[in-house]
Image (cartoon, rainbow, N blue to C red; front, side):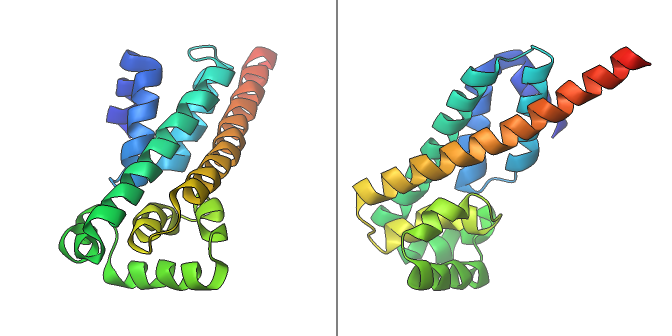
Length: 168
């Protein structure tokens, strides 16, 4: 996480976008912690609140689109061959596939809030050939809600911490 923090402090919103995209694709980047930190950086005015949301949204959707395209182009072979490297084990794949069967498109929308499911949802949506427009809409809505929620929590906690420091 320290490397990610330095990367954000050095490269700002470009780093935010890139880190979230890579985290969604499945690299071991703690997405929620990262967004909480971005919210905190916004509260102390090292980043701005609304651009932080926009760039988190762009990074999240980019990661979901990359996952979708890989799943659509390569199919299940990507899960078998490379899944373990990005946290998509056969067991996790089966779990997310079950969610897709049970909840259909809602899985993409709510996947953002469930680690593991979030990282597999794009691949499985591509593998199952979910219509792209539907996938894109659900991904954007989920990413927006997820980004606003976690950045706002980080911002509010950071703001409260600043108030406490001012009181002492």
